[in-house]
Image: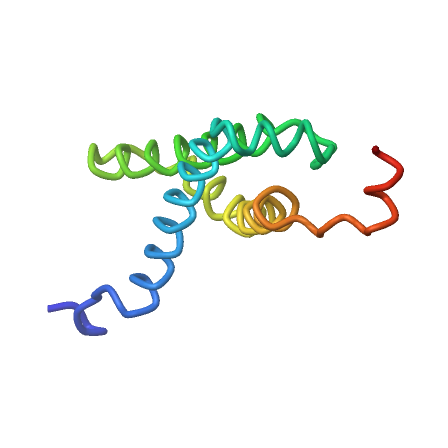
Amino acid sequence: MAPHGEIGFGAGLYVFFSIFILLAICGVWMMLDTTRAKRRLRRELEHIPREPLSVYALCGGLYTVLFLLVIALTVAGARQTLTMIVLIAAPLMIVVELAYLLRVVYPKPNKPGSLKERS
């Protein structure tokens, strides 16, 4: 027995790991959601967002691939050099997913005056 007792996984590890899993699931959802015809049509008609939808899909896919690569390397027992990239990218991914929700899924409605200008 070690002098400091046994080292085990605490509740914090499970909470952080579940957050990473949720971010990866939301990244896949963003990738699939950007391909929907409804999103593309809304983007063309309402001119939102200004950036292409593929930027959101790329961010979601890249984070998911990095996360799955870290999991695969952990199972294989390899050195963990990419773990810090996933850890640092997690807050950035939260910002990207919130931006996607606010700019694409639930955008700010147009003002009544701007509807007359488009007609």
